[in-house]
Image (cartoon, rainbow, N blue to C red; front, side, top):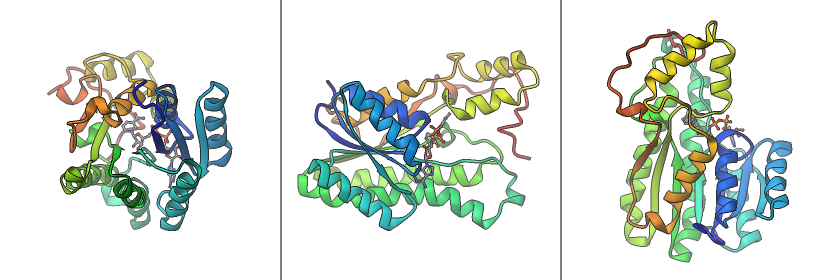
Amino acid sequence: MLLKDKVTIVTGASSGIGIGIVEVFAEEGAKVVCVARREKQGQAVAASIREKGGEAVFVRCDVSQSDQVDAMVKTALDKYGRIDALINNAGVNFVKAFEELTTEEWDRVIGVDLRGTFLCTRACIDPFLKQGSGNVVNIATVHTGACLPGAAPYDAAKWGMVGLTKSLAVEFASRNIRFNCLSPGLIDTQIWQDIQDVAEDMDACHKHWWSNIPMARVGTCREMGQAAAFLASDKASYITGANLFADGGMTSLLVSKESYKSKVLEGK
Ligand SMILES: NC(=O)c1ccc[n+]([C@@H]2O[C@H](COP(=O)([O-])OP(=O)(O)OC[C@H]3O[C@@H](n4cnc5c(N)ncnc54)[C@H](O)[C@@H]3O)[C@@H](O)[C@H]2O)c1
């Protein structure tokens, strides 16, 4: 087992990639603290892990709220006595033309994706330093390799996450705390469902995406869990400050041969 008894906080654990991370970490022996705002969904995720013989607990928390984050980390410490890893996965995104963007929309995305990552990380640093070890995996995006029009707050927040990751990697390297980013490509989550739901021509939609993804398929949430588990494990013991792209080759492709307009991912 890659993560035997490693106490791991996973934010945004109630859906999508968060569930994939929680499942793989539990299978690899981790004790998982499932963090989410949505009580019913989060409780259900933790319960399903326990039903399969894993160890998991749900803690309700809005990661953009400092007091809630501090209380969440305290609950995790009270329950398990230590924190070995933090996976900052909670995130929000939307696509909108920059000239129409409101300050509230900007603040919301930065508040969850970047401020939330900062708050959760800061709350874990003290326990990490006391233990003499720690590990953070920040879930960024392929947008940190190349951007899409209409996603300015998301792109700014996720590039900020990469900067934070590299900065803390060098600041804490000598104190045995590692920081890395995992950047997913297009993953089989709600966003992929939304793209398909509005497709007028499904064949053209798939043709477009497969021409932009050299592996010609979307990734799975469990594949993101596996990549995160590797980064959080001792198998990655000499890796810090990295941004690992798990994108089926998407960011290595210079130019796609196909063009297709997606209503979901279209800025003006
Ligand atoms: N799905 C993809 O294709 C894809 C691609 C690249 C990056 N990502 C990133 O992966 C992560 C997970 O995305 P997903 O696709 O599974 O989406 P998702 O919407 O299913 O998951 C995001 C989770 O974050 C939670 N969340 C949002 N705001 C929160 C807050 N304030 N406090 C606590 N939790 C909050 C949501 O409730 C949800 O559980 C995100 O950071 C996203 O940017 C996803």
